[in-house]
Length: 147
Image 1 (cartoon, one colour):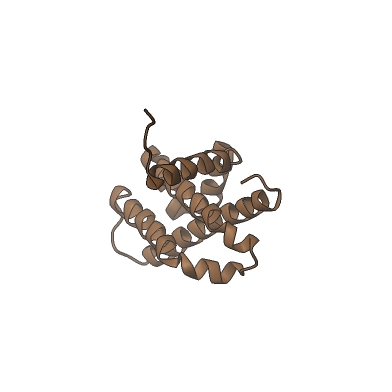
Image 2 (image 1 turned 120 degrees about the horizontal axis):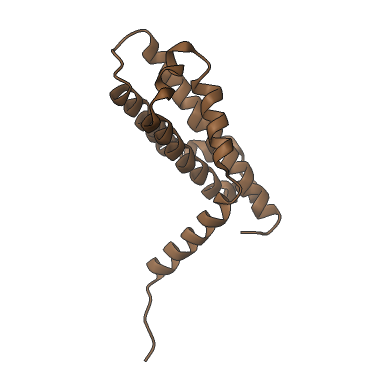
């Protein structure tokens, strides 16, 4: 007797396999360097990085944004521009930036003040850079037919 699998299970297995292969290009050192470059640039955010939980949250958001960019890279391979693709997943990208910003505000014990707007822009830039990085890596994998 054969085992019946649904299309949903097959898609999920294929997605997990693709995510594993795309994450091989990502290293902890890359994550750490990008966090230090963006969040360690000002004395305001440098104090936040002393807490391990905040740095790990940055890693989680970076991985999710990287995977999102890689997932949408197939449309770039077929000729669509990066900006039009980016508009398609703008809500997810904004959600990642909002999540990171709110996490830093809550666990960083920050008061509402003048630094909040600049912190939000740093979070947006962080998510945006990782999305572009994932997009480029995924598009390269499609060009090399490694998908």
